[in-house]
Amino acid sequence: MSETTYADRLAGYLTDLTVEMLPDPVVRMAEICSMDYLGVVLAGQITPASRMVTDIALGDGGRAESTLFGKASRLPAPAAALVNGTTCHSIELDDHEAHMRSKIHGGAVVFSAAWAVAETRPTTGVEFLTAVVAGYDAFGRLSGATDYPDYLGRVKGFHTTPLFGPFAAAATAGKLMGLSAEQLANAFGIAGSLCSGLQETVRAGAMVKPFHAGWAAQNGIIAARLAARGFTGPRSIFEGSKGFYRAFCGDGHYDLSVIDAKFGDEFDIALTMFKPYACGGGIHPVLTAVDQLRTEHAIAPQDVTRIVVHSSKHVVDYFCTPWEAKVAPVSGSHGQHSLPFAVAALMIDGVALLEQFTDEAVTRPEILALAAKIVVEVDESIVSDDPEDEPASVEIHIGDRVLSRTVRGGKGSLAVPMSEAELAEKYRRLAGPAIGDAATALLEARVLQLRDDADVSDLPSSLAP
Image 1 (cartoon, rainbow, N blue to C red):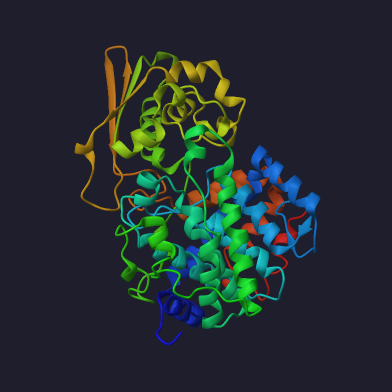
Image 2: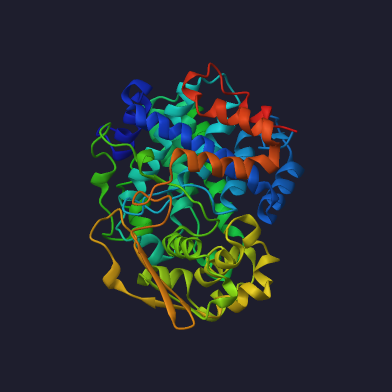
């Protein structure tokens, strides 16, 4: 191929990327994202989705290359990435990128691929973190090239994490494997045929959404390994007349210039948002407002007569429709994407974490009774001109008394960020029950200094029981 393609240019940039090109806050963010991922993936082992995928992968077996987090078991790197990615995304506490840029869950895909590959070879902390930044950058650039607000998800029904995730995982895996720019461009071409994932699973309350993250991580590693052997993919995968964007978006609804814009000036990992609540990110602004009112006024749930939520049409369409299904979810997965259920659970339990979104929890009569008192209204007037904002407004009625709160965004967003101390506390709360307090503290200290680590390849196996 004589002229360079978008895949060539993106691959060239990513293969040339070094830690010296990364500002210190970007490296620090990669370390913090590492900590967040490890807490989430260790906690996620208890979910049915994780257990089922783990059982199948262990039953299939294969070369003992890479660790399943929190277990003594090892599998081929792609299979380990499948399990760990599914596990991480299954509790809806994994990071996601600022919605003004894209709609993807970076950590569940990128770190699942990164750790699986890093275990197969000596890998310095600097090499690991640079590969992670490369993966987030590929993810954000390729997803950000599609129309906002979220044309692929809202209009077409695709889940963007598994659509763009194979490219991100290929970038991360390829970086760790030392692929050339030509090989990585071929890996992108291969990954383009391994992209899939539909939003119908969320509407139906089924279990497939977390599998999407594992699927993407696995497929990216496979693409990189094939390219390393000389297997070729169409390097015109992005702009081709039969390529990725034309196939998924049709004519228009994308701008390929985003893919290679401002190389080295901006890094997508800097746009990472974190989750304090174990449910869909679009619900977090509402939960943040509810949490503030609940704690400031010491509200007793039994005294609440009505809760009125004002939010965007997207939030209402995605997390409140159809109402009769969302107000009485059929599974834990369904509850993770139900605004009325999440609000009621937070009001009653004071938290919205793993225990509030199990298959058993969604049948709790006191939560369902409060969820039935919630009213959600589309109010586009509260939408901000600031792209970092995702505002919401809540009114809690206690008899004749009305408590109200409007927030710029959800806790953990760019508008309302979580501090490093808050993220460390989240990590400890998730990792502690899985590996014990002593191991949790040692892992935290190590992961927050990954840049100084001479070889991180032993880290996943060090967490085995």
